[in-house]
Image (cartoon, rainbow, N blue to C red; front, side, top):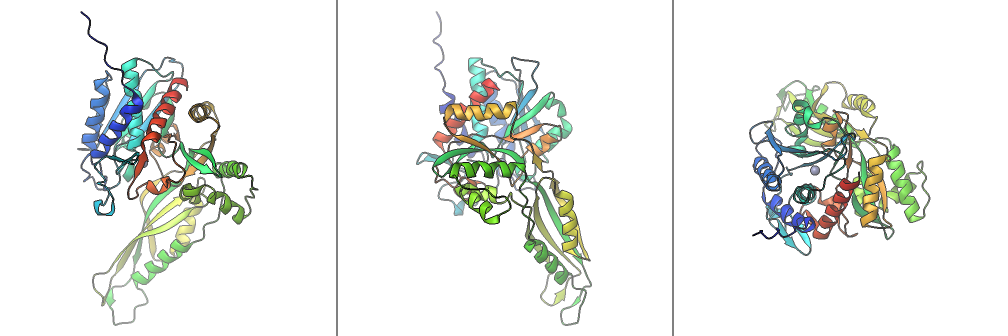
Length: 442
Ligand SMILES: [Zn+2]
């Protein structure tokens, strides 16, 4: 007697269930280690992978800060390995601001709603669905595939990707390239669909400004007031007009947008640049911040009573610098801060920029083209950061490629860390098809 073959599982169906279940595991990352769910998410991922015969490894950088890595041998051992990575943590959500429970994994109106729906439990679910399909049906990528699910990306990856590359670099042996989040999504430009592939990231410097002065009574003359000194520095840094500087990625993107819209692109003309950025619709939130370095004051802290002048005052500033500008930016900030204000790093990470060319890029473009014939793929720079910054420390070139075909009216950029974060079910299914196609061919 033979047993009936197991019913075929369709990864483009399964991805929906996995994404919803991942959202229901609250993995909020508060940045202080108090987040509740990374361990539970890692165990959930382990369960899904071991169920289909894989032997992934779960490791913790600190109690509860769990990541999962699985290495899948490719069919061509002469090829370098490819890293496919995602993060399981999310930024916190205030339930009272949302139309649905942010941790309910609700499916309605053709969308999956919840914190992490686009950042990035969507891609994590796509990765799991494709890797489970490999496990069940036996197909293999050509290149060794290192599939990683990291903790702590939302606080800079110190307990996730950064920890892994520093303490477990052997996990990435032989890897030259990586694929992860915030790229591969579609935008509509002048009625035509274009996909933005992320080939660059701004660098980041979260800074503390510390002003010192003479403490004293609020009624007396004080020409050495730390609050006055700090406020001046914060205002100058916050209002600084950083120069517009179009690097190769942004230049290539805007050239492509100009072709789609049939308009002229003059990189020296701010009006021409602004019009092309506008043509990207909601995605201009991403692209508008990549034309220049930015410096936003984010916190202020000083004093304890209205009539007491404190001896110190403190502020935080979030600086996002363009590739190649870090030294210039440091010098400019020191000048803007002025005497008596010290600048310290809270967290700093590198900028990235690689050419929009090469074998892997060609395969990503082809995989999109096969699932959406006639669509254009353009490079873009992310104004934020991803775990690709950590992998770059091992010489691994990272791309943002979490493919999603999106309705033109969806404010995708606004979903990131936003209220009512959601992803179309059809976009998830599309992503699974593109990702599977890419991994079969690249
Ligand atoms: Zn993310």
